[in-house]
Length: 446
Image (cartoon, rainbow, N blue to C red; front, side):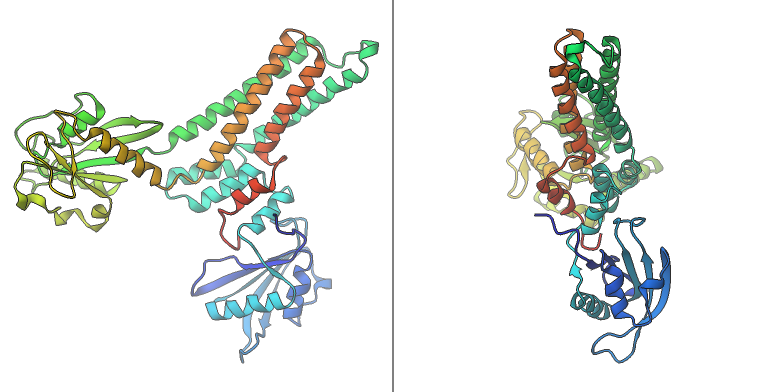
């Protein structure tokens, strides 16, 4: 059940913990009145649309007043579309707890996760795709994810869809107006115009689907690096996983000097396999360069397969300390050449010759990829893709109806279906369950 948007809510909207500044935010019809009760020198009747006041806040049990700045914005030109107040003061956790508790005593309610942004959405300040993009900006872990989220936040997904929705609404109005005058044989839009307008909408939504697919493909594949001591069978395992002769294999150690990459597909997931030079002290500048490139690849890996030939001596069992703690935490021990000797306990058994253990290794890779945190925009892209496919289905039906000159009543039904799917994408049509699922990803105070 959605929280009551008429309540006045309060929350800490800056990062928790000690610091130079903290921001406590209030939103609602009583935001100014609640804030005025806290500061006797604040009179909301004299406030302009936007103003800032230097005040001293008296808190119960604290002898010295708390210096603060209070920023005030009147509705509707605010983030939430409601009266908005922010108290900027020292980021001292005990004092902030007292400050928020005082606001609660004065009639405010503690904000739920994402409630400020939910009010912005309900007030028409943000489309639903922009709300999801805002989560993407907050959760972005690299430059690519941030760039995609910022494009969507700027309206890259919602603005063209909103325009298309307006065009389809106008088309539906023309079609339904003609239904009211069907007995008089009055047509508000000609057959050729109907065909052009439906075809335009169909092409537009098809382009949106391609853009969504491109964004999905732009996500980085799960990156797996194969490493180990020289002649540990890494390259043979690399070739066996890819199913082709991608890496040069030799009985002499040190054959791999550069790193090789290949794409492995398991079910619907893509994996980028990287075969690097064996871990060893570089005897020349080229070998040293190969070792440096190998370390760089391991640092960016989602998973590291540390390969060791099952026939090697027991003393070689330890993982080299030069790999670093961060690499060891992402490491999976894989025994190779197990057609010659069984693997030791704790090592995954594989053989590139007999293909022993390859299916189990691929299943492990798939499980590791599924457990990895999904990209921030993945839920948004998945939701949009569902509505785009449904919208395309309705528009294809509409296009066929126009071509066959079928009754316009059927055309109106398909246009309404397409409009409903577009509305669901931008948030003109939504359910409480959908909003709960989206806004639960926000933190308190956002």
